[in-house]
Amino acid sequence: MHRARTYRTTGNAAAGFTLVEILVVLVLMGLVTALAIPSFAGRSQSLQAREAARHLYQVLQSARSQAITTANPVSLLLDYRQQLLQLEQETAYELPRDMRIRARGAPATQTLTFYPDGSASPAAFRLEAAGRTFRYTIEPLTGRIGFDVDRRHG
Image (cartoon, rainbow, N blue to C red; front, top):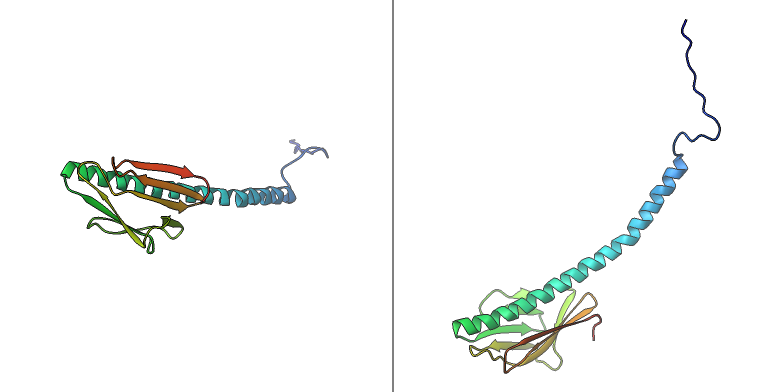
């Protein structure tokens, strides 16, 4: 005859997790996720700001290079009121709502011109986004484009 084996657990052996333990872990995971999401959103905004700043710098460099290589002046329109950038006859680029382009004492619009000899119209302006200020300067004699980053708006 075969006897059925019975297994008994002792009182101190754990057979698994209780519902309370699982709920505590889920609540802790939810809290950690809730705290991490704003950090990722801030990083995303910071990354977008850096990309916009880099793009603007590349547009300026491209305009300068184009003026030198084609032996024709190249102009870039900055519209501070409508937050637009437009290179010559190309489509205007509108800045995202959370980014602002500003220039102290400048009119509502400003035309930056790069000349074939490498010179340019002088300019100083800034792009403000995600708690940072990206400063641009254009040297008139050399057409050199200066670029600097501050952590705070100023």
